[in-house]
Each structure stands twice: as structure tokens, then as C-alpha cells.
Length: 250
Image 1 (tube, rainbow, N blue to C red):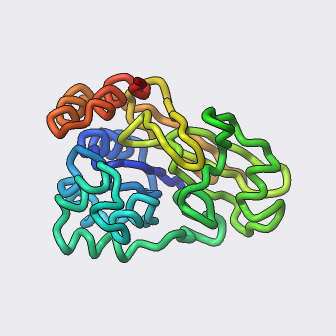
Image 2: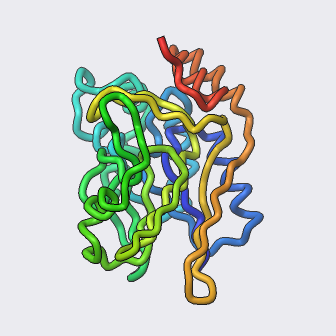
């Protein structure tokens, strides 16, 4: 099985189309989507129209939950922009997505961890900085060493491409973000995430000769056009992140 793993598209249709074109050249068997699909100041409705007919195995992220459950006053600017753009059938599609989904007996799809949609799986926030999580932290978030029956867990949420093999547990793969390579976050404390380049990210995971192989891919697209769209929609922070892969500070 050869799996293309997409996550955190955030309504960036140009990046999504570039990733799907790159995927098509690589002959995958199935493509999965790990959530945070539409939220952001770009093209949420058009992105939904692109994805819905594809019927990819998909899980919802924290932004889907927020769009569906929060009031306009509770929402952040990205979610509020998004919900105001979406049609009823697009909201219904989001509402039908599960929090987690087994792709097979061996592969589990989640957004953040198997247990919640906000905790980072492979990173840990300490005060206002982010470090790589220890194996013990990762195992605890997976459910404890040996507790998860899946051989592979595919996760997103942090936008940071990373692969971790637990000694007594699953292979955990974050493909990075298709649509946004830097952001700021208030949970659990304020911090920044930065990938460092504007390329769209995804991964290909393949079971071959009895073991799992992982390829992380960085794909060029017209990020300057995406940044201009974000700026027109009142989001200079997104414009900077889309152009540079770094967060706008100050």
C-alpha cells in the first residue's frame, strides 16, 4: 500500500493543487487528509469544492470542530472568515467527518493525537518555546507503550514534517502542512511554529518488503499569489508566513 498523506490545507487551493499534481506523478494507491482543511483567509469554499468529489479518507481537525461548534464571537479570525464563506452542504460535509479513522488494521488517521485535536503529538511546548517531544511523551500521547494496535499513526496539526518510530509502539508520521508553513498559537501557552520555507508539504508512506518507508516532499507553488490574497483579506501575518515559512512577530 502506497499512501499520500495530506494535512493542514487551510484553504490554500493553489498549494493543494500543486501537491495533488505531484502526487499524481508518484503512483499512490490512496490519499488521506488529516484535517484543518479550510480555515484561513484564502479560498475555503473553493477548496471544499475541490476535495468533496474526491471522497478522500479524511478526519476533522480542531478548526473543523471550532467552525462547527463555536459562535462567531468565540471564533478566531481564520475560522470566522471561513464559516462566512461556506455553503450549507460544505458545512454538512465537515460535520460528517470523524475525529479519528482507521485506514486499515495497520494504519490510523488522527489530526493531533488519538485522544484530542489540540495536543501536539511529536512536539512539546515549554513556556513559550517548542521542542521535539521525548519518546516517553510520544508514547504517552499514543496511549502508552504497546497500547496502540496500529503499526502506523498518521497525524498533523503542528505543520512540522517529522517521523518517529517508538521502540515499543507505532511509527508516527506528520507530513507537515500543505497550506501554511508558519503560525502562532496560544495553546497551551503562546508560541510560534515555523517550518522555514514556503513550500507545500506532504508525505508518501509505503509498505514495502515487510516494512514501512516514509518520504517527505516539499512542493513549489505560487505562494506569492497566495500571500497577496491573504493580504487583501486583511491578514498580513498569513501573507508573511506564506511567502517565507516564518511567523510575523511584533
